[in-house]
Image (cartoon, rainbow, N blue to C red; front, top):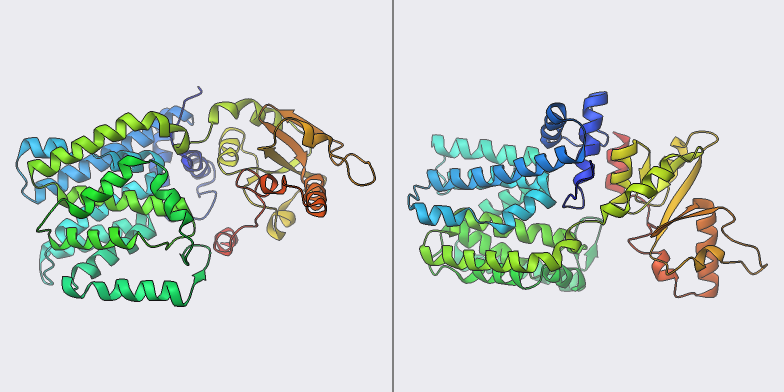
Length: 422
C-alpha cells in the first residue's frame, strides 16, 4: 500500500528495522534501540509503509506521555493548563521528522525535571541520571545537549555571558569547519533554518526567550541555548533546525506554568497549523513520484550500485533491498561492487531531456545508454563523470545543477566511513 509519509529519513528507519529482522543486526552501525521499536511494529503489522506511519504515531504518543509525566511530577495540577500544554507542534514535528531524536528528547525532558534542583545524595537525582543515560542511548547528541543544559544551569546567570563571549570570539578569530560543526561567518545555513517554516518558528523563538520574567534554572539555561543558536555554529540548515525545534520542545516541559503562557503557545500552534499546508513539501520528499522509477531501476540486470539523492536511496532500498549510495562512489563502494556489475546514477534537476543528447568536442554522444524516468534520468556513473569533465571544460552553468544536493558529488564523510568499517 502506498502511504504518504512525512519526513526525509523515515524510510531509513525501515531499512534498519528490516535488516534487524532478517540478519539480527542493523544495516548501518547504530546503537540506538529505536530501530528495535520499528522492528517490533514490523513484526506485528508487516513490513510496509503503514507500519512506518504507526511507528511515527507511537513516537508522537511518547512525546505526549513524557510531557504529561513531567507535568505530573512537577505537581502542575491545573487541568486546563495541562491540556493546552499537550498541543506542542515542535514535539509533533520532531516525532514525524526525527523519531530517534524525539524518543531521546522525551527521556531528556524527564531527566531534567528530576535533576532540577540537583541534590547529590537524593534518589530523585539518581533517577534523573538514569533518564539522562537513556537519552544518550537513544540519540547521542541529545544526551550531549542535555549535559550542556545542566552545566549551564549551574552557572550563575550573571556569568553566563562568558562562555557565549568566548564562543563568539572563536567564531571571529579562528573560523573552523568540519563535517559536523562549523564556526564561521557564513549565516546562510542559519537563515535557512529559521526560514524553513517561516513565521511560526520565529514566534516560537520569541516565546521561548521572552515569555517568563522569572524563569527557573532550566528555563534560563534553555534560553541561553536559544540565544546561542543565533550564531552560525553548524554547517547545515537542517542541523540548525533540528536543534531549534528540540530546544522549543524542551521548553514546553518547563515553561508552561501559567494560563497566559499556555494561551500564547496555543495561538502559535494555530499559526503552525495554518501555515503547515504551504510548508508541507519542504518537510518530505516527493515519494509518490519514486515508485515507478524505483521498480524499473531494480529490474536492470547489471545494476550493482545506484547513486541517487538522499531520500530516493532509502526509499529504493526499503522497497527493493538493492544497494544505493547518496554520495559519490569511494574506494569502499568500488571494492564491494560485484564482478560484472555496473554503477548507475539517478540524475534529476535538469530541464527537459536535452542533457541526455549532450555531445563532447568530438561530436560523440556522452550518454550512449540512458533511460528517462519521468522527473529522473538513469545513466551509467562512468558516463556521468565524463559529463562532469565536459561541463567543467566549457564552464557550463549546468555545473551548478550537476553538483547539487539532487545529484550527489561529494564522497562519504570520514565519520560515516568509520561507521561502515565497524
